[in-house]
Length: 101
Length: 204
Image (cartoon, rainbow over the protein chains, first blue to last red):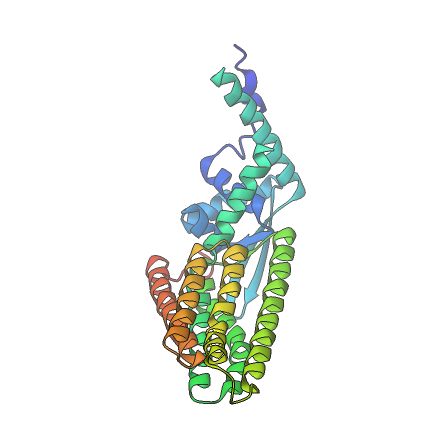
């Protein structure tokens, strides 16, 4: 059985917290920090650190603005991020399909 | 294909979840009850301005109660377009329902005094029309937002219309009664929402 598939899996995406944030951003236009927190159940610190990694990879665009006097950070999936998610889903489906036999 | 279905399902779940704050129930119920009260007190024209006040009140509530607790999200352009279409249909149906009721009521009002009891019974049923017609709007909202409780509200409105017809009441009582039920449901949902989601600091 060929087990070299693990090299083709995007490890930036293949992390539960990042995957849940990306899944949420994949289906909406954009979402802010609090919304992502509510949807994923992650803490603020977790979201910040994982978002930095996703931003570094170029998968997420971060926009910092003010809503009234409150700072507001919103996130949007970039085109490469969307493509990477699609590739990731295809590969995982293939790996799981192979395992199921 | 499965991926598209899965993504659509997740998007629908997130979209429906964004309407579980009870603010729309609270404002819609309050508007209905106020319209009913204005009719009961003989000022039906006052009822016409209530929906115009309801929209800014709802937006302010959403901004001050929902956004600090739930955050902000912008849905896809397809979803926004679908929402706009749904809104246009709902408003169109609302206007049509209002015109239908006004015409029927005007026709009934000009009927000769000598008419038989049969016509009087018909007038009684016309009085039941406003809540029944509004139930169509509640069903539209149920379909548009994917919220089953609005289908229940549609049932409450139909029931209110039947009570008004059978008990020969002013149509305002039907609107007031149904509005009060929706308003109370909104209070309960909002209280649960606020308890479940305490406000978050803007950015952690």
